[in-house]
Image 1 (cartoon, rainbow, N blue to C red):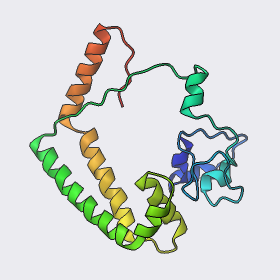
Image 2: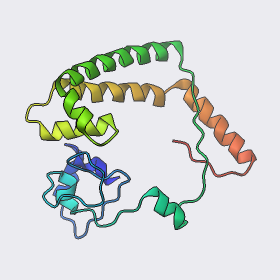
Image 3: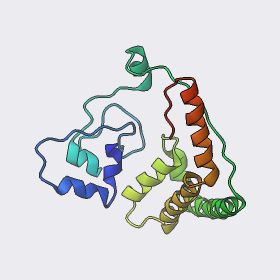
Image 4: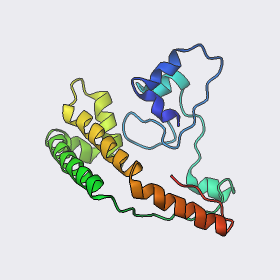
Length: 178
């Protein structure tokens, strides 16, 4: 997950003496929002500066064709939030909506023109490229992190995961919960 090491705190790891470096990521950095196998040799991304250009690319389809990934089933599970969790979640959702409105007012044209589908990736590109990015972008990331944390810590989520694992063990299935 080397793509995380572009952040202010995480990139400090590159200040250490290291004899060799290898970065692996399912979402490698891109300065322009384009997903491509060839990365710009003059990239301003701290990960590319520290590790060098991407030298190997393997997409999901190729990995499946080469039997590098086993077959699996994804089950999406909805978890009911408690009244208190739902109240906090809804407040954050409204605040995120307001932050997105403010971001769209300033950057709507740029966001729409970017080739990546992920709003988070688009906003990261703006943060890296603008000299004075709108504070609403930072607020958006803070609020979405807080809202995600409500779901991660939800009381019913833990109960649900325990049941999934118990049921899977009965059938002797391998289970990965995330």
